[in-house]
Length: 418
Ligand code: ZN
Ligand code: ZN
Image 1 (cartoon, helix red, strand yellow):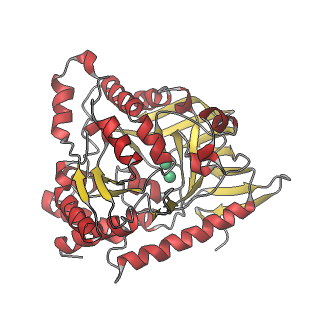
Image 2 (cartoon, protein in one colour; image 1 turned 30 degrees about the vertical axis):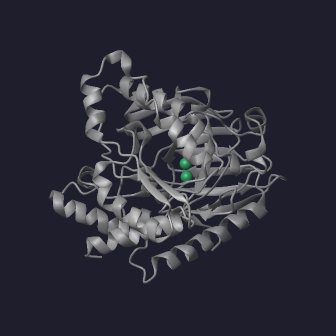
């Protein structure tokens, strides 16, 4: 696609009609990474198209919370060193208020993955942890789909430079938009229809996994020898969710995954990352985590080991898994061969797991359980949720039945059964 304006408009329509599936009469709040305070200014051309699309779909009011990355950088350079546990006075409460009012909430990522690469890891962690704690009531509502929400991405100069380091700035930005357009199926004759059929095929896959009721998944591959227990009542989920008001929405665009709840105490073995993890503005690469009875007991990394350890030490739950997701190696994002330094894209390039909080909707009846009962059922709780990629063309996964028999689920990174 050559015409940027056409891409922006198609992407905005997709975010509004399929992403949040905005209903006539709803409000829309556009946000961004919470540690930055909101959506990056570089995303403004897309956000304006989103506002237009939302009003065309019947929105009563569209607002954006902006978060200028340069302000975040000024803070790291100049703010008192003991002030990094301070968080916004209004933002956490405002987010909860919008979610409780049933407004559509759309997060747009357009951020520089290297924004904080030269900053003190201790301060980065302090900001991440303080933000995670402050945003916990909001995250809890999102995790039980209390309202229709979605996350999309917008190309931005610094991000584009990182993904396409060998071309000049303008070309890099153009290529990133073209890539986003392709991976989000914006080049289909009717992108909204293309998404509905893609979401349908993911639904069929998760239905089949739900019928299998596996007790565990066994992973074998390069640097991976891992068993992940699945709790009784785990639910496989794909890229479509439904809010309590019955609005079907797609929380992530793009999405290629089916995922469920790992048992927080039944993960054993060793897992290695197959792609770098961009976390809190730094890169953790080539890392290996060893689990015993669900807990990460050893973590090493060729790059970013200190940040990885800080992440795992955020709270008790940050050392345990809260999500297990399957993505075929042949997914368009994997086949693009690109590294996006952005979880929205990179997590859809490969099978992955997440350290930290579990989604209550991945357990049957989980949303109605108290925190204590959710944990007793095997669900993990934490202030963080960080996905990292473990899938590759060399990964085999078996499903383990309750009688101990195994059946091939994935071979060489692809679904064993079409
Ligand atoms: Zn995932
Ligand atoms: Zn995740």
